[in-house]
Every structure is written in structure tokens, then in C-alpha cells.
Length: 110
Image (cartoon, rainbow, N blue to C red):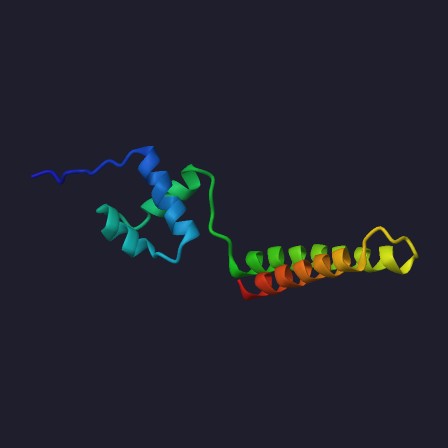
């Protein structure tokens, strides 16, 4: 007796890949949830759609780049006010600095 193949549409495959990449759901959990077999389906679909899961090193690199850009922005704010160019009022400057600091902290927590 032939085994029945449960063919998933491209849309469902893409949805499964997105769920895998954007959540902490494991491949095993997704296989049970969507009722499909095969140990390499999700990896195959990721290649099919040109997607990949970032490694820890890649995530840290992206965070470091974002933090560097934010620090440069904060330094620019400080330079603009220290040169006597009062482009920003003290309140606006403090608000921008606080928003940058909050963003840096949130990136470090991720």
C-alpha cells in the first residue's frame, strides 16, 4: 500500500518557514502542528525561498553595527551643540539622547 503524500502549497510552506524563522518554534513542533513528515522539509523550503536563519554571530554583528550607528548619532548631537551651533534646544537634545540610549539598551537585551 502506497503512503499518502500530504502536499502543502507554496503559501503554507512559506508560512511555516516564516514561523520557524521568526519564533522560537522548533522544526519538530511545526511538523506536528502542520501535520507533515520529513526531517529536511523546512530546510529545503528555506533554500527554495532564499531564506536562512541567522547564526548567533550574525545577530551579534547586526546588533554591533546598529549600536555603532546610534553612538555616532549621539556623538553628532553632542558635537552640534558643543560647536556653538544651537540647532537643538536643550530639551530636544536631551529627548534625542534619551531615545538613543533606550534604543541601545533594547538592542542589548534582544
